[in-house]
Figure 1: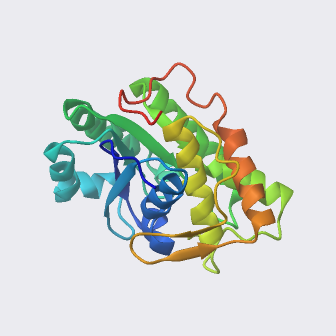
Figure 2 (figure 1 turned 90 degrees about the horizontal axis):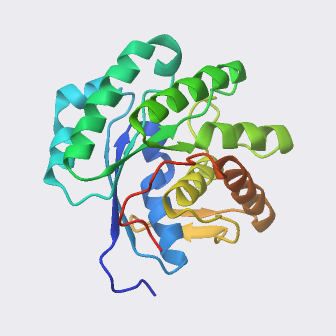
Length: 235
């Protein structure tokens, strides 16, 4: 049963890496509520878009300005940390200013390298870490969690056949990292099967789910040391 207290509210801004398989936001909400915690997620997403596009288009900014958020998640286009770092940092800073003005905390969605370009993870990790440190923001280290799983269990598919988008297991892993980042707790022991509010079900082998949970926990320990979570963080 979900507690009666007001929910912790999270807004996700991103593209298909966020909304595939029902959405990282929806899976995170379902996993968190399965543990009896009241978390409410909303998303402003559009396929193939950058933070620059979201800034110029305006809907994401309007959503932030409506307020009531505890956290706002920023997910940049997958290759921008490699191909256009100045633009990534510029629009991350602009959004962070709006997020702070709205009384919320910024969380960066550190994405994964494409299957055939694993060497790009180093640059992706570096740029997300750098901007998060500069802005005293939180970072959900999803890409390093993928890297860890692919090293330990190369048979556990996280990429779709296009070698870019997440399988249901990839989305589940991302949600586990966000669970650890936002709650401060280990995702170990979360359910292996979850149905989201929008009717999507992810059902994993419990042993595979355990591998994903432990990878998420491992990359999240001390990832945000010294960076305060929202005052409304889940107890």
